[in-house]
Image (tube, rainbow, N blue to C red; front, side, top):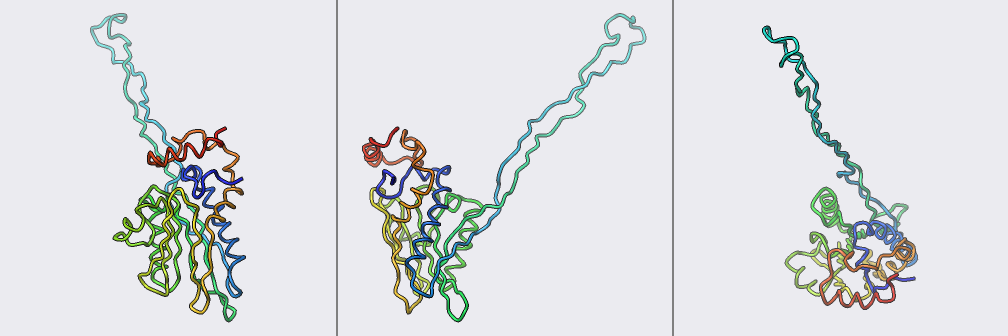
Length: 274
């Protein structure tokens, strides 16, 4: 059963849903490429590991008090004021203890490799951006470092951005981004390793199916097509999404849809709210 949306499902941009979609999409893309690539090529999944903050344990401060008897006054009667009086004295103040775990985070991506002379060589790298790739911090820093490394070679870089929130992250130059993507919620960007400074961009409006994009290979091999919509449909069906009651409240979509898109989505979801 497919998503009720014709292309990307904006409910799945939620950070609680997107990791499952990301993993399923990587698997679906790799499977499709494996069936499509010509002889002498293969698709392989790899992963990038970066260290970032994980769970936190915070213990509140506490003032520990003990009772201390006041010294007896020489002229005070034994049963009068001051005799045996106890005062509260701060013995120690416990600090706030914060335990911040810095856990390894793993993000998978796809490599297209050629086999020649008994050796494999990376021809193209395909990335599906995650929320951490588009938010300031170690996840984005790690992604941009990998992006820079690939762009410095003759490898092709294919980036698929299915998230409206976050910092612009694909290799598309900022000077061209606003113009090229003015009507697009999402996009894919292919940076050609064999043609420096060439970017093949696929703007994706919210109401459109995901496109078929051209995947360049080596110079003597024609490019192949990757059907992103077919990969998304497979990922949606293989994931937990259709078994969840995702569509009861449009307010779950983050960031919120523009008013005209929200009206369109409300009409689209009439038969999908349970």
